[in-house]
Length: 79
Figure 1 (tube, rainbow, N blue to C red):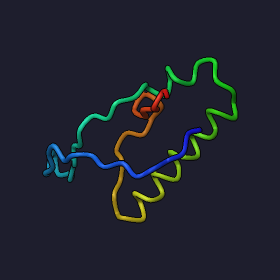
Figure 2 (cartoon, one colour; figure 1 turned 90 degrees about the vertical axis):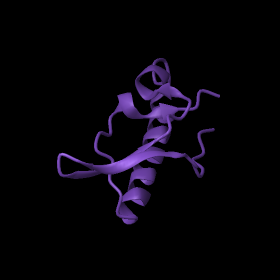
Figure 3 (cartoon, rainbow, N blue to C red; figure 1 turned 45 degrees about the vertical axis):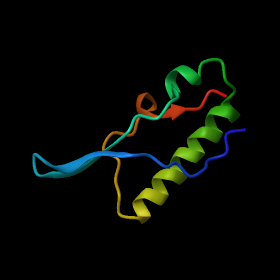
C-alpha cells in the first residue's frame, strides 16, 4: 500500500528571498513520481496522487504553500 503518514523532516533553512518567505527541509529518500509511475496501473498512480492532494490540503490549512508541485518534485517510497 501507499498509506500516507506523518513525515518528520529537519528544517535546513528558512528566510526571505526576493521578497518571498521560504523554508528548506532535508531531502527525503524516495524515487521521483515520474520514474515510479512507469509501468504502474492507473489506480496505483491515482492513489499516490490522492495522497499528494491530501498532503497539500493539510499544508494549506496550516497556512503553508509549496512553490513547485510537480511529478518531478514528488518522491515515492518504492517499498
